[in-house]
Length: 70
Image 1 (cartoon, helix red, strand yellow):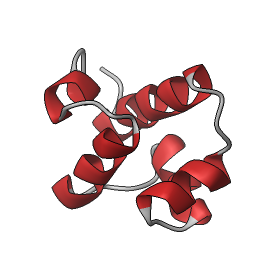
Image 2 (spheres, one colour):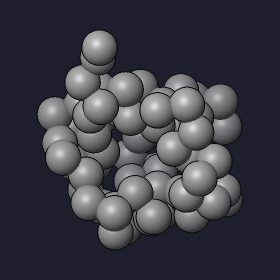
Image 3 (cartoon, one colour):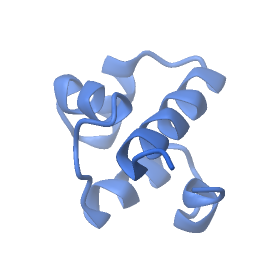
């Protein structure tokens, strides 16, 4: 079974690429550093619920939709 941080990071990257926004722009829009966003997408961070909520809002979706399939 793949690490949950890696799975979540892949999900975030996939969604970000679908809306055709750069990592830097998305990070700025949700109020986090680009390097932190890179670490999230690469599965190198244990992401807090607070940050997960920011990411969901950035994608204009609810938490359950963001986490679906994890």
